[in-house]
Structures are given as structure tokens and as C-alpha cells.
Amino acid sequence: MSSRPELQAPPEIFYNDAESRKYTSSSRIMEIQAKLSERALELLALPDDGVPRLMLDIGCGSGLSGETLSDSGHQWIGLDISQSMLNVALEREVEGDLLLADMGQGLGLRPGVIDGAISISAVQWLCNADKKSHEPRLRLKAFFGSLYRCLARGARAVLQVYPENIAQRELILGFAMRAGFAGGVVVDYPHSSKSRKEYLVLTCGPPSVSTALPSGKNEDGEDWSDEDSEDEENQTVCISERHRPRKKLKLTKKTKGRQWVLNKKEQKRRKGDVVPADSKYTARKRKARF
Amino acid sequence: MRLLTHNMLSSNIKGVSNGFPLRLDVENSVSKEVEFNPDFLRNMFSKIDWKALVDAARSMGYAELPEEAPDSSMLDSDEFLKKFHHALLELHLDEGALICPETGRRFPVNKA
Ligand SMILES: C[S@@+](CC[C@H](N)C(=O)[O-])C[C@H]1O[C@@H](n2cnc3c(N)ncnc32)[C@H](O)[C@@H]1O
Image (tube, chains in turn cyan, brown):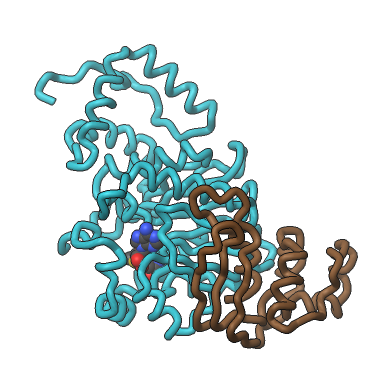
């Protein structure tokens, strides 16, 4: 795999005319994006009544993801920060309306009007600070806050993301939860480094039966929350460059003791958050070599 | 851009307290035929700000919508639904701008 596009240039520069064209003429990319979009639409779990909905495609690019929405009969509004990508979408005469906008500044939409949102391979871009004025945490907060507001109560957003590492995934998920969403991460093909895909499945409104998380594809009967607690163990090793100070904070929290951690986990569970099961490893002391 | 989208957008420029509706500056509008789907229209109806839709349609030269917000019994009338459909999905702002009602900032709109 070549280096991540996210690390090469800001999105509106990386997706210039040439790259946008290249992106949209690769049959491999078209196929992957279509598959991801179909899966996202499935995870949205819209009522099975054949009624077309008003959907949002965040980071819609040249419209590969939006086309899946059109194919299912839905109306959609797409937004993207790259004019070049949107130009390709216009050329391809996609059916959605296209907006040139930066999701990191929040979505300018009326409250409660959107029936469902998808975002395919885009939200991880928010973790970068591409300009001096960019503060990833503020941008994530603005994005998720505005996404929560514009969705109808009970509506879902499914965001397929490529986090650079576990810290980044936690960062994104954390801001989604803080905005009020219920839900978590669904991982398809968790054991394959190539096919592994992550979807944030978020439901707007208070937790209920409908906010229970669907299971990922090919989980091999393994409970994904188990996997998650493994991840938590790894976190101390996977310190990302960008979030080093924040990581330290997390570590000091851990010294609060097992009972404190158990209480916190219980609190989160009551809120409907997805929390790994308690085990003998929960909040145990770590070896000094970390 | 369709009036469906115009009806959903609200200016979120810092300091703006009510960014809806965005004013329309229409240089050119076009009409494109779209498949009629009453279910979609019934689903959307409660979310539409009626006055904003009527005003926007009129600024694009379409004055067939009832001025007063119709009650939901109208959703059984094919004649009404057809007009609603045309205004919401078939009229496009092709060239022009959306204007923030408080700051006056212009967001250019081009090509459908
Ligand atoms: C890998 S492409 C995916 C495009 C499309 N969703 C698809 O499936 O083909 C990622 C897109 O995210 C967009 N993007 C990145 N950061 C963004 C931001 N802050 N606001 C809006 N779009 C952004 C990029 O411009 C790019 O078009």
C-alpha cells in the first residue's frame, strides 16, 4: 500500500483535476466504492417500505457513493471540499445536488430534515490539521454536532472510515458519542488486512432497540467487542504522532483504579454506549515497560 | 440546484442566528423532468418550509403553488402533488447565487 493520501496534501489539493479524473476512471476504485456504499446503505437500515428518502452524502467526491443512493431510488444532497471532484460529478450528471463545503466547519442544514447520511472514505480527513487554523478536535466537534442536528430523530448515519490507527478511530468515535449519537464501530472482515473495513454506525436520538449495533461481516463468531478490548490494550503502544498529549492524559486516568473504571463502564453502558465486557484484565496494572 | 435542497440549507456562518431561508439570486433557471413519486412527496411534506418553497418557486417564475401552507389532506390530491413535485424536484437554479439572509454573503450556484 502506498502512503496515505491524507498525509500527502489537504483534500482540496490532493483531489485536483488530474487525481479526481484518475480516481473516477479506475474500475477498481469504482467497484470498491460501490461495494462500500451498498454496505453503508444496508447498515442504515431504512424502513423497508420502498419510500424514497432524503439522504446526505458527506465527502461525496465524484458521486460514486451517491450513485448507490440514486440506484435505490433515494434523493440526495452531496457535499465535498474538492471543486475538482465535484466537477467530475457534474460531468457524470449525478442526480444529487452538489455543494462545495468543508464538513469540518459544520453542515449548514436545517434541523431534523435528513432521513439518513452516508460518508464513504472521507471522515478520517478531519483528523489532519492542514492549516494553521485547523484544530482536528474542534472540526470533529463541529461536524458531528451539525450532523446530529440535521438528522431526523431516530435516523442513522453510517460513516465508512480509514482511521490511520486506533487512536484516530477512538478520536472520531469519541466525538460522535459526545454529539449525542448512540452506536459504535462495525468491522467487516476483521481478520483480513486487505478486506477489513470499518463503519461507524450512528443513531440519532436516545438509545433504543433500534440503536443496537449490527454485526460485522465474517466476524468468525468472535464477539467484536472482545476484539475491541484487545485494541484497548494495544492503545498504549500505538501512540500517534498527533495525539500524543491526549494519550498521556488517558494513561493518567487509568491510575484511578479498577473500581473507578468499572463504574465508568457501567455508566456508559447505561447510556447505551458500546463498552467492552469486564474481565480480569480490566484496569489491571501495566508493566513498567510501557 | 433543486428547491428541495434550497429548502434544507441554512447559512451557518459564525454569528448568524437565523440563516434560513437563503435568498435566491436567479440568473438562469431550468426545468428537468423527474419521475413522479407521491410517496417521496408525502414523506417530505412535513419537513418543507412552505413559505420558503412558495417564494423560491415564484422567484424562478413558477407561481402555481398555494400561498397558504396546505393541510395534509391535500396530499391525496394528485393535482396538488404534481405542482409540489414540479417545484421541489424539477425546477433547478442553474446559474445564480444563494445569499445569507443576515450577512449578505453570496454562495455562487452554477450548472444545475
Ligand atoms: C476517497 S474520496 C471518496 C469520495 C466518494 N465518497 C466515493 O466513495 O467515491 C474522499 C473525499 O472526501 C473529501 N473530503 C475530504 N475532506 C473533506 C472535508 N473536510 N469536507 C468535505 N469533503 C472532504 C475529498 O475531497 C474526497 O472527495
